[in-house]
Amino acid sequence: MSDLNTIEILLVDDNEHDAAMTIRALKKSNFLNKLYWVEDGVDALEFIRCTGRFETRRPANPLKLVLLDLKMPRLDGLEVLRSLKADPATRSIPVVVMTSSNEECDVVDSYNLGVNGYVTKPVEFTSFMEQVSHIGVFWLSENQRPSV
Amino acid sequence: MADLGRGSADELRRRLAEFQESARDNARVELARTDATLETRLAERTIERDDVARDEALTQLTRTNLAEELLHIQAAELEAANAELESFSYSVSHDLRAPVRAMLGYTRAIQEDYAALLDDEGRRLLSVVQSEASRMGALIDDLLAFSKLGRRPMNSATVNMFALAQEEAAEQARVANLPASVFAIAELPDILGDHGLLRQVWINLLANAVKYSSKNADPHIEVWAETEAESVVFHVRDNGVGFDMAYAGKLFGVFQRLHRSSEFPGTGVGLAIVQRVVRRHGGEVWADSKLGEGATFSFRLPRLDG
Image: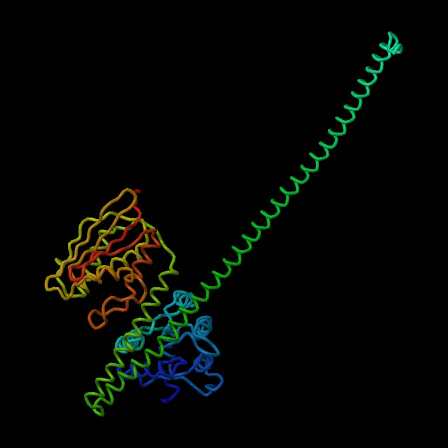
């Protein structure tokens, strides 16, 4: 895995196959170089806050994107989102929920907590590829964020 | 017999009077007694009747209470069943889609990275796995759409059915790469209903008409409406393959198909959705056809001014 201090994309997904597909899709779109994958919400918060097993991490730049699954063990995606958006230090990190669920309640809850985007993972790999590529292009190349 | 003289006559008269008096007294007593008995009996019977009435009232009350209690229990059970159904479709959406996505993803990965290691038969088998996994994904997604539809609240407003049918016909023509002239849409009356749900009805019926007339070199799809006393009947007629009326009862069931997927692709959810939406609007849907002579799908909805 690449240097933890230069990571730009954090992928949070408990399903290793879904994660593998996302990584493959990002690799094809040439966005893979600065990605780190964690398997649940606890690890995600520790990574972002440089605590616990990530306490030695000294990020050079803030994350450009968090790709967040919803249903996960230990701490689910909505809790991670709530925690990130309630904290002034992490509020401006773009979070895109990427989930299997297209349940209205999940979409509404995510937006109420301040999510920056919500996509339902399609089952077809071609559509999934396109989706990941679009997300990569927009959030990693085009999106403008506060400089500090 | 001398005693029976004048004195005797007096005596007789006196005794008769006495007798009459006593008889009258007796009768009075008897009468009083009868009266009393009657009154007692009457009273008893009244009490009895009251008791019966009270028992009946109690029984009625108990019955009502029981019925109410039963209703509460049933409502609670229904709510529990609904909640269970919700959580079921939630886990279907999350848990069933993920493995299918993995199958499709890895199949694609093998095709991209290892195609050279497989011979033609190997590649063919892999593409079968891919298309079947893809079909399973479509079935899951359609089943979810169908279940979501039932739980979605209705937002009723005046719906311009003519505009909706025209928009969706144009869209279907675009998707199927057909000239717009394939569709002939007569003016349609407005309806009170849910715009989004009724749009889905038009999408499904028009897409079906396009699909099943795709093997006709010169497809024609007509849409028109007839206004009845209290309702409007909308019709969509195509000149496609049609179906055998013996199977008409199966048309609107979930996952019911009258054609093989290899002939006409589909999951068999479209018409089930149409029926669900039309019924939620207080209407009905049916179809007429002859094998090889096209089909007419019709649905009746309450009139806006009816």
